[in-house]
Each structure stands twice: as C-alpha cells, then as structure tokens.
Length: 557
Image (tube, rainbow, N blue to C red; front, side, top):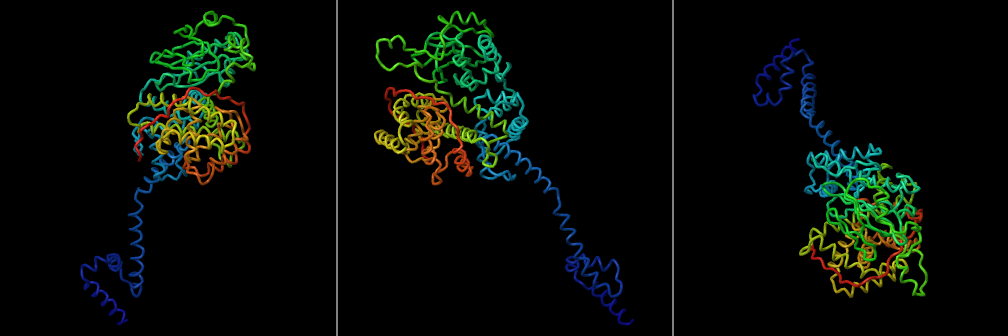
C-alpha cells in the first residue's frame, strides 16, 4: 500500500517537472494522465491513448474533399477521352489522366473546329465535344441523315454543334432524306419520272455526290440522273446533272448535260458553276426558285429523250471514220467518288457504335472500308498542316500546281493496275531521279498533293502522290495503294496485285503514318484483308499532257 502511494506521488511530481516543450510534444499522453490516474493501469493508458489519438487526427486531415474533386475531374476527363476516340482522335486507354497523348488529341480536335490548338480545353470547347458525342451515341434518323449528308461524316456533328452553340446560322437540312429543301425537291422531281422512289434514289450509289465546290466550307450537292436507269432525263450522249451550291441566301441550282461526272469536273464561284471538262456539254438554264416543273426542265435540257443512258458514245460523230475497236461505254465506266464512299462508311460506323475491332469483326470488308477512310482522313490532315507552312504560295495556287502535276503521274498510275509492285516502284524511282528535287522536298510536295487529291476526289493525283512516297521509302503509304487496287477506286480492281501492296504497307518495320497511336491497327487490317470481298472496278484515264513537278517551300522542323 505504501508502495502504491509512493508510485502515485512520484508520477505526479514527474508530470509537473516535465519541461513545457516536452509536455506540448506529448500532449496526448499528458491529457490521458490528467483525465484520471488509477492504480497500475496508468502505464497502459499512457501507451494506448497516443496511439489512438494520433491516427484519428491524421485521418481527419487527409479526408478533406480533395479526393471527391479528383474523382469528378477524372470522370470529366474520361468523358473527353471517350468522345475524342469516338470522333477519330485516338488518345488510347480511357483512364481519366490527361497526358501527352490526350493533349495531342485535344489539339487536333481544337484545330478541326478552328480553335487554337493549345491542348487545354475551354469549357465551351468541352461542351461542344461532349454534346456532339452524346448525340452520336443516342443516334436516330436525324443524326444519321446529318452524318450522311455532311462532307466530314461523323465529325460533321462537331461542326453542327459548334455552330448551334456559337449562334451561327448554317444552312439547315429542311427537306426530307437529310437534304436541304431545294435538293430534296429536285430528288422528288426526278423520282416522279423514274421507277425508283425518292428514298431509293438517295441511297443509290452515285446519284448524289457531296463536295464543297465553291470553297465556302458548306456542303454542295451533285445529282447525276444517269444512275436512275430512266431515259427521261437523258439524251443520246448525256444526262441531266443538277449542281446545288450553297450561298448566304440558300442553295442555287445549276443544270448541265454531262455523263460520268465527278466533283473535280466543276468550278464554282458563289452560286455559279462551270464545267472544267472540255468534252462535257454546255450548261443549260437553271431555275433559281425552289421546285420547277419537270416538263420545263426537260424541254430546255433534252432534245432526244429516248436513248438508254447505259450505252452512249460522246465521240460517235468521229467514230464512223475510224476502224478502231468499238466502244459502247463512251469514255469508260464512271469513276466512283471515294469521298461519297467514305461518308457512307462513316454513317455505318456511327450506326454500329464505333470502329470495328478485331474482337468484334464480323464483316472484313467493313473493316477494310473503315481503315481505308481513316487513312484518307489522316492523309488529308497531314497535307493541310504542311500547306500552312508553305512559303510563297497561297492554298489556291498549291491546288492549281498539284492539278497540273497530275497528268505527269498518270502513266505510273496506269501501270499500278497492270504491273507487279517492284516494276511499278522501279519506274517511279526513275521519275524521281529525273525530277531533280531533293528527297525531302519531293516527299513534302507528294504529301501535300496527296491531300489535295483526296479533297478534290482526284484519284490520279492521289495515287500518283502515294506512289512517289512509297518509292522514296515511305512504306506506310503502300497501304493506300493496296486499298485502291483492292476496291477499284482510281485503279482497276486487282486483289491479286493489292495483296503485295498490303504486305509492303503493313510491314511491322515501317514508320506508322495513319493512326500511329493504334498499334493494333495493322493486325486488324491483316485479319480483315483475307476476308475482303470485291466491288466493280473503276478504270483510269489515258495519260495526258506533261507538267513539271511543283516545288513547295516547306521549312524543315
């Protein structure tokens, strides 16, 4: 008993005798002693109370609202990454962390919409991206029609949402079939004298071609009545072609008599268009108002409305004196529009919920179509970026020089459909040596003209430029040549020749050019190519006049 009191007294004295600084350093211990000192349990209290009090204070300090804020931010980042992937700016895994890859995708998205490519999204830019993505996911007829009628395909939703949110007044698709009212009325007018219905005509390949003909950034429309199968709109040598170009006041219609038309055949300024093809018939009068009577248009446009459009020869007058092999298809089969094809592919991709992967692949041809159009998009973007760096030439002058360059490449483009890969490359290599240009400068020129060719739907220019790049060691562009040969765009459909170009273009040793952030893309294409089905070939034209190789002064990075 005496020992116990002595112990208590000693502890009490030692507590009072502690220095102030030490007492503050162990205030948890002191607080436990002051709370009650009972017998021999004091020692246990002294050890236990500091251990419980200290973690509690630490936990309270670290459970501030910051983790909640981070979680919200990560969810927003995931939404941004998902949307960027959906619209073709691949940023990789959706993890909510905005790293260099995501910054690059954001910069490309900003540049596409005309914003500064900072890599940092403003709230306005983020709202556009998320809203457009939500619309694309929800889908529906209106979204499908908008995507199918926009030259940018699925990405057109971003431009539409941007215009809506910024208060702009783009030309609205007020008519049926996702077309402006003036174009929809023309479709109904043509369908009234043809067997297919309006909806069937709109879905028929080649009936409506989309392009920006007057350079105002809006979609223009070309209606080719030769694909209707009706003689009502055709004469002995040509069929009615209606070109609708956008103006601030609405769409203006231009009527022509022609056959096998492509967007590259028209030159438009504001609401007035002319044909650049010298063999095409002259333009006929076109109504400026909405719907015109079919009979009025027919009386002006047609002189012999009785011949079938499938067998006509524009050169029939001079053919009588020539003993050459007869031709029953005039200048050859109509060259299909790759731009229109890629718009349809974009629509199907959207309807399927995004790009096909190797795990979800059921239609190999759809995979090839998607990757072909994706590569085309990357080629256009790359060329447009280079055009901004060209010194001493305007974009219009660059386009003109590339178009003048195309005839020089036609012999090599024609050889692509006839000769094995190695022979074609040797021939193009000789052309490069004779050009006198440095490889770096010629490669930049070829990349620019490749983009120009795809934007104008000029397959000779696109294929010729790709051949130059491949011959200079850019193996990745061999994929483009394989696609063209495999599906017959700008070349005779030759799946046997395409296989060698696929092997060359998909070589693992190459430097990736198209979707470089998707390393699985080559394996997907390899798996799909073996199941690819064919389409009708599109024959190339004969070689034309020679032209010099354009030189674009692009500063080296």
